[in-house]
Image (tube, rainbow, N blue to C red; front, side, top):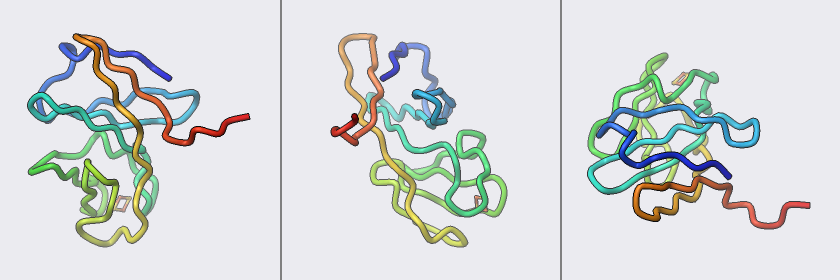
Length: 104
Ligand code: FES
């Protein structure tokens, strides 16, 4: 898991963090924070470099859009959803962790 400051996040400006070797795209929208895999499922561009509109992030490379809430593809050419990560907030502290519970 990784801890980051809520106040350090700028609304609709995604940041890339490293979660145990996995790049994760963290986006604040208002009081909500979403974390999805940073690597686009289409051709591995970095999603955190894309634009955020209406709970969706647009991959800068070919324009696929992913729903930040679910990781689902909203617009092709991507067809495979991206992983989502758990975000817990305690005051200013955010904890980002994998949803995969059973880890050896
Ligand atoms: S790499 Fe993201 S849409 Fe192609």
